[in-house]
Structures are given as C-alpha cells and as structure tokens.
Length: 178
Image (cartoon, rainbow, N blue to C red):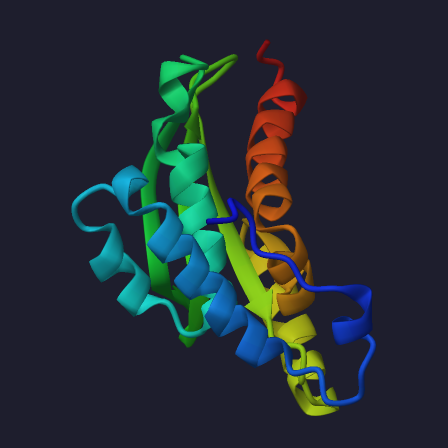
C-alpha cells in the first residue's frame, strides 16, 4: 500500500476535475492508512467537521499535536481546541471551522483565540464578501483568523496544520517569550 495519496498534473488540469471527489478519497485514504495513530474520540470529532477539507485539516492538526504544544514549549498552553465552534460577538453568532484557545505565559499571561477557516473551492462572490466581513468582525474583537482554501488543504494538509502551529509560536515571540 502506498503511504501517500497522489494525483497527477494531468488529472488536476482536466475540466472534469472535482476537488470534492478527491477530498473524499483523500480523507478515506488518511483514515484507512493511519487508524493506529488515532486516539479515542478522534473519529467522533471528525463527524463534527462540515466537509472533507475540514476533516483532513482536523486529522493533521491532531497528528501534529497542537493540543499538547506545552510539552514542547512550556510558555504556551492550549486551553481548548473546538471543531465547529460557535462564537458570539456583539450579538452576532458566527460558526467557525476550528477555534484554538491559547495562553501565553510570558512575559505576562495573555490569552489569544485563533479561528481557522476552510474556504470551499466553489465559493461564490457573495460568500467571499461574507467571509471578509466575518474575518474583519472577528479580528476587531481580538480573534486571529487563519484561512485556507480546500485546494491548499488537499495538496498539503500537513503544511496547513504546520502553518497554524507556526502562527501560534510566532505570536509567542512577538509577546516577548523565547
């Protein structure tokens, strides 16, 4: 059995290429190939994800171990990792793909909330506008928003999960930690 899922340039460049079909195959491949790596409850957590892109990113975030980052860096603590979180800001309810709540312990204790969003490849113009408004509103109230497209997740789920981790660590350095 191969240890990676691949598509060729020829497949990707055809007019009938459907990212959603390949995302489903990619998620199934990842599940079948890595069941030993999954902890109890991770399958149930995947069910909460809206689409295959979110499922794939969720698996990579779990595999990367973002929730246990404090084992590697005692200045950072992940207080919560929620899939399909609901955030209430100024009377407006926002549903987000992931919410990661992080505490930076130095130089002063400070909490930062990261929202991770997965944009669908067939996003219509009005959805893009809504996404911009949602991002600005969340940022206005202190949330750091990180967005990925389904294509980014499909072609490099590990890189997307690693980018989330890199942003969390970068903010520690900005806060004056080591």
